[in-house]
Length: 207
Length: 209
Image (cartoon, rainbow over all chains, first blue to last red; front, side):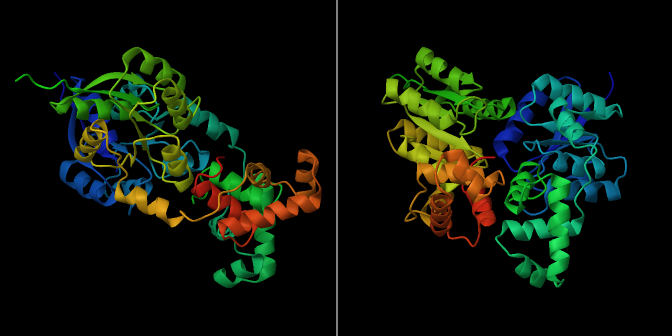
């Protein structure tokens, strides 16, 4: 028999890792080789264990899952990582896929979908859950916000006026106004408050 | 002397992985047993009637009705139901809502598994359980005046990017009245502007997107 697929799970919720362990332990062709509860641990564990497939949460204290993914793939370009998250927003999914995730799956997915995804990714295929694919498709033609525009949107969400945003970023108030205008148009927002709402919903910013 | 009956635990969560993790944890404990699971609020109410569990672990966010609504429905029929909210969500408003509706405990999903077993035992024994991190979150806003129903409605519209005049037309009130509501909302939340009001309200669980 072929070697079992060696799996590393990364999630700050021990209960969720417990659920993954329970599912994996029922599969004769899979073996759980390690667990990590944050991004930093994930990078260390990956170096030591060299798992075939890593199941990685996004939102974790300290180094988040996408940062860990980037660090791991910089060292091990063939690393196969499934991002497993509660985030439905298209922007997080896009970030993960750009960072080199082979799959992006929601934690609410059925067990069968999870197991199929692990096997597919191990075999070198990519997978994106249907719900996430629909989110991505819905925004595929959108012009993404620039890093600067995301900074501006974060500061707006904190209640800063254009003038304060300008001070914080050391740019002119007119430049901030220009950024805000572009943000509204890219997000299809009625006003700056609506832009923050859309930004939160799509995972562009978090509060 | 015979062994006491094991604590019969019921788990409500829309994520099968979390239910699996809870089941694995419970079944490792000699004094408790997982007797049923449900993945949404309506199922939870039916399954509760059928199984009469000793302790229920209920997620706050479920796909149909909220976990708090499901708890209220269950406790209307079974006032002694011992329900612990188990959630990723730490907004003080939902915590307060859950406790006011009769939750015996409120714990976050990143709780170490061993501690969760302890919470189940203590709640089964008739005690209330609010871990320190949740209590701290609650204490931060304990003296805040809550938003009124009308203010919540206005805030929902503000989040959609509507102007005061538009909101007035939608709700059949004057623009000045809307302005007054927005001013009160900002005061109660301690924020500088309407945009920050929305961001803070989302974080605290006052409104949902």
